[in-house]
Image (cartoon, rainbow, N blue to C red; front, side, top):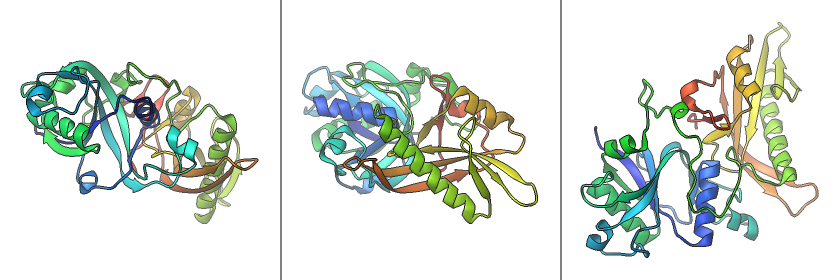
Length: 315
């Protein structure tokens, strides 16, 4: 297999580090405090590492390679962008953006007790990138052959070479997680927060569609918007909103069925990076970036069956 460009990221074992890792995996979004040229170069996969068997990860190369770690493999599905919405727990607590340099990812699989030696499944280049990430506290880009790691993780690929999400576990979480939650497009346990995000997304989608000459009515279920034109043309729209990168969105089984069977053709609109001000009542929203996918069919290889999570790579 040709070496793949990867971004290696070592995750802190602190409570805050573990919460942020969980949030990033749950919402398919990662961010850094500072920008770096590595983040803007071609990257196919992201490898998170944590819990080196020696304890502290700040080791010399020999001691590092004699140990093991837990790895989480993700596909990078959203290119780098500048985020404006507080998204991680510490950002919400401080009501400010701490990690503005962001990208989107789709978690694929995890593997524990992975040897970090030169002959391990990350090879020497991938292992060394993880070590440098732990020392430098940033992502390190390199190229390495992931064939062995992917085989041990049981990954299957579709005809285009993308990981077949229907053949993955559908939920990739740190095994010592301190945060529980539902995966999807930036969901939280705050119902008012979720309503504010969804309402803002629908409003942005409506404005976008009206600018294209559609008459738009809000429906709700089994899809959000019905669009018509005077000549009788009709289009159905499902809208998803998030404070994160929008790399994946969550569907109900009815929504998936409607995408696949709608006689008019169903579109998907995703609005990411929605800013929510929780100091007001009701919550105020602003910002957001929109992508519009026409005639979306919810292909099986793009969906993880657990929770009906769908990859959105049009960003």
